[in-house]
Length: 311
Image 1 (cartoon, rainbow, N blue to C red):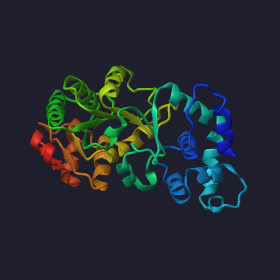
Image 2: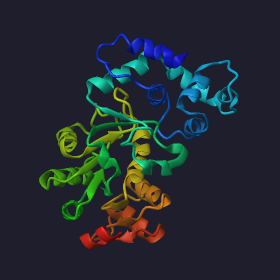
Image 3: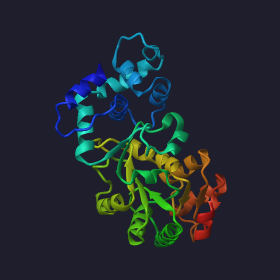
């Protein structure tokens, strides 16, 4: 049995002292062999549970309902080459030695809001800091990596004002607007939520590692990517949906016409979350996405802190 092999291996590992449930092991395994938000895997887990779904995919023969599922052939072709007991054990070991908290849907700090993602919900979440903040009222405040001085100024005004009004502020850790959000949170002792598109052991970009570490001491840093996994463009894009799902509402400060920030806002609106966008001083590349969100998607115009607060 797949789960039994992992348990046998970690039982002799002195770094792993606490017992780990079969569901947690299975979800950890899924996170190592499937891409985040894979709807086919999500549907299989929803129907049969993480452990039964994993056993069915990795067993070529079986008489369970999961083993007869018609989606298995495709999943086996992509999942089997990626799976190994050692990889799952290494992920568990890195989780423990890194001091990360591993959340699954049975954990009391699992954020209920991610259920709105349906079959693209995360398999598990790795956390540094106060995991309870994942369920606190929060504003996703994010935008382009190529922020203008005006955009950075507006971001600081909005972030500081929202912090003073009791909101947790969520963002990525990218350059530009995200960096301004993190720096403002540190200056105002805010409760930040950082959603990483990499494992918690690999902050990208590296120059923001100190800001992310500061968040972990007063807020929370979260990722659905296991530690030890390399970054990829796909994982960066999929992280946008998690940021939208974790937060109460979304505000985009500056964004290009086709960008991950626009995707975050659109996902938020699809999930029924309020969404606002800041219109820049002029029509620029860095403001085209906000203009698109307001004109074509119905995002609310955010010009003041009151606008952001009342979304």
